[in-house]
Image 1 (tube, rainbow, N blue to C red):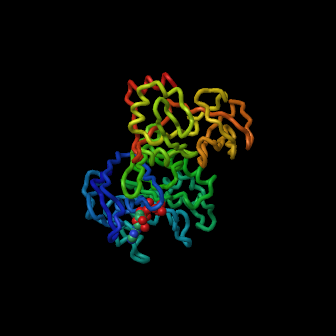
Image 2 (cartoon, rainbow, N blue to C red):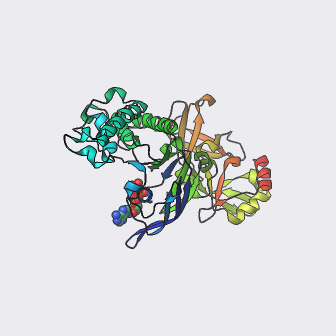
Image 3 (cartoon, rainbow, N blue to C red):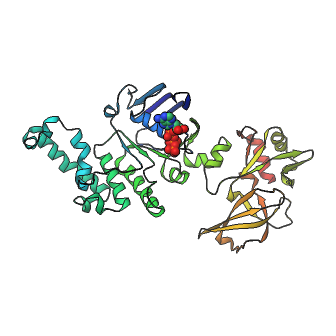
Length: 389
Ligand code: ATP
């Protein structure tokens, strides 16, 4: 459906996008995710035809549209601000793009509605507007003005207005960032439902990894104008290619610790890790690894005498209801704060200042080299390694 070939973009001497290539399938829901300033909006605007590119080609539905402007690309776009016409009703706001694309005869004052084009326009509006309004739960609200709507309802009108013409591609740029947390969560499921109902191809820009993880089928993670990794949300979470991806995806953030190796033993910044010691895997890691990443759920409570125990003090407790995220500090790693996920079913009642022992679950550890690239353990070695852990 959408093909980007080696897209590059510079504003003067500032390079904003570097060699971006991407294929998006028909009906796919992808998120462009990344920190502020990484180039997400610029890339979306290039797809929309609202921004010129310095290099590369854009194909939509198999057609090279690089030199075509936005109105010739059959796309719809929704931005952070919903910009509804305040003096028009919800129904008229939704109908607006249909009117805009109608033949000029339909717009002749007074007589336009009597022309064949005017009659066809009226019919199209009567069919399409109630359909899309209904799909977005706005059926009862078509006669209201925007001022009489809640924030979530206004955002739904903006979505309906964008979708009313059955676009080939539906582009959204942080459409939920003006809403409060509860409404954002509600709108997330509504947008997913909308994607399911319309079968349209969705491209969604966000800097919020939770939005990208929960809504999209595939995430394209950008950093400083380059794609760092593209894949399903779980591929990025479980199998990151680099430290940037591993740290950006997931909440609480990945625990990243320096990885040290000294003769005979493997040390995790001062903590002796006996279970790694004897294995050839250790030699592989010794050569390459500079840091180890452990997700909050890969840190387990253990007996203080356990060979791998890291002795910690609880600094902060975040109660999530079904689970608790505990932030701990350890003398072995001064200055670093580790996040640990503790299930409520484990019956642990922890309090701030409490001393506890944790052990890394080595089978889930992610190792990275000095440049932040993943150090992968070869299968055989990994197996031996897992058995030891
Ligand atoms: P955010 O999440 O903050 O919106 P983003 O990832 O969408 O960020 P872009 O808006 O695409 O980032 O901007 C990427 C870079 O390009 C930024 O450094 C920005 O300052 C720069 N930039 C964007 N538009 C222009 C412009 N018209 N002229 C010069 N620089 C620009």
